[in-house]
Image (cartoon, rainbow, N blue to C red):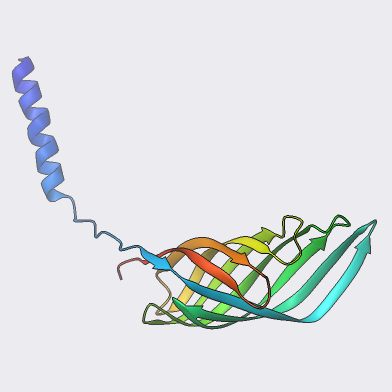
Amino acid sequence: MKRKISTLITSTVILFSLLMPTVLAEEHINVTGTWAWSASDISVRQAGDNLHISAIEHDTFTGTFVGSGVGHFKMTWHPNGFYAGSGKTVFTGSVNGHSGSCVIMWVGNTKNDLGYWGFKWVIISGTGGLANLHGSGYCWGPGPSGVTMTGKIHFDPS
């Protein structure tokens, strides 16, 4: 009886594995390049010793991401020289041969070195040829003039 149950379970597992649809593997692509930005419509508000800054962000991407972006960011400057910030930009251009737009959210800080930024980024949505784009990574470098952009992206199968 035990052998019949074991055979039935094994046969069922094999049958279901044969009937399950094949899952396509997603190819991960290494991100390389730069992300530079400038700011406009800058607003500064003081709260105690801290300064709260918000602005419109104008981005230029080169490398795996080729194009431009426009977004909004907020930062807090602490009197010890530490900046912390977050933002969201709408990128328009091409990524690995696919054209469209995607929304990239970022969060980061200067770690007490005003000339050196480090931040994490993640793609939260996309349209056109970037509708199935997903990924995240890290940027670091001297700030607005251009930071090194790295990470991993993939396109879900259509």
